[in-house]
Amino acid sequence: MEKDEVKIPACSELVEPVLVLQGSYLVELAIARSLGKYNVPVFLLSRGEKKPPSSFSRFVKDTIFNPDPLIDKDNFICSLLDFGEELKERYGRRILLFPTDDGTLLLLAQNFDLLKKYFVILNDPQEKEILRFSQKIYFFQTLQNAGCTNFLPLTLFCEREDDIESIKKNISFPCVIKPSEKDINFSFHRKYNSKILLVENKDDLEKKLIDLLSENHKLMVQELVNPKPGKEVSWYGYRSKSGEIFGMTARQKRKSPQMGGTATFIETEEIPQVHLYVHQALKSLDFWGICEMEFMLDERKKEYKVIEFNPRCWLQLSLATEAGLNLPYLSYQEVYKNVLPKPIIDKKRRVKWVWVKEDFLRAIVKDRNEAFLKRLFKWLPQVLGDCVYAIHSFSDLEVTFQRILGGPERLLKKFGSSFHLWRG
Image (cartoon, rainbow, N blue to C red; front, side, top):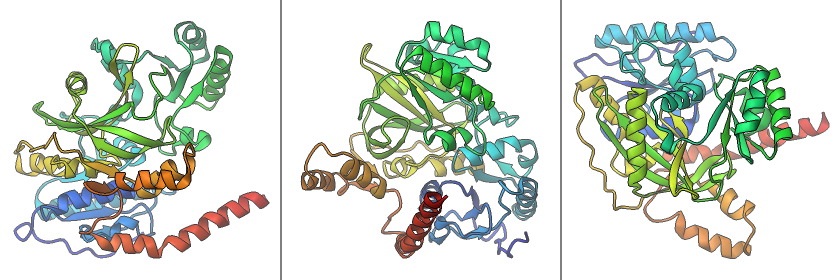
């Protein structure tokens, strides 16, 4: 596929651009809007010929169309390298490139040796290898070996059937199964429509592990800490190459689905214990860049346990920007300017983030403990006021208009797919 001609300004005319690889359009929007506050030009790298929703943002300078890596990965990487070479020749330096979901991070990590000649991709301060940071097995084993057991849930790894008996003896029930390594096709999530599987007893555990191992999954079995709503918190932040750490915490008020799902409503809240644990973890990992860690409250010990690590920009990134922690711009400053200004975070201010459509479905449609109108009038004040929206922004209305105009087409495609499945 040939790229459309892109007008790249000369070095002396504008600041260096940042590249965003298409994955999650909510993350793409959050990065572009965060950098747009400082007039940093953002180029969106597509994965295929279709125009991405985030390309309508006024903060996206241009969209660079590339082959779909799921269909033609080699030509996709060649396309990135050609564009990277052009940028490096124009700007005289490597260009900062952000992945926007697990698939794009994995794609970049698998081709890191080729790409790092033209792009700066965060994660490894030595820039030798970044694939390990995208795999849960590296995260949990590194923390176990570093003695960070005070905030780790019991985690056992399963790579072959011989491991199952030992796991059955040591794990308590209920527990959860997760993939310890991800693949670019999200095969675990696609099959089970979830990031985790809940297991109630030993027989169920053995059966599920055998089935998953037969599909060549590498697995981990973890104690179930606390699945109750509102007991999960996130740390959002940045660790510099020299080891400086800036971060904030927020509580996940609602998720869909509640277990193993995505947060749809979040509110900032200062939780000192989580900051201490994150500092230990990031130092042990020797991580560089933007990341999120998720914790659950273990009510038996009144301590938080880490359950997830995202070494990239994530869905609710715009919440951090609104609270004063502009993580894409921190990266930009360190990579291009070799400075790292301390962000001013108002930790007393309670900022909310909501994915309106998904949160409406979660709070109003799925939760039927109260009458509909009572649920609705309880929900509305929560999503108004000092709130950041996943899609809508008054400073970027073109995106909202395009989503509204494209709504009927998306519904037709959805119902069309459902109809064909029903007929089949």
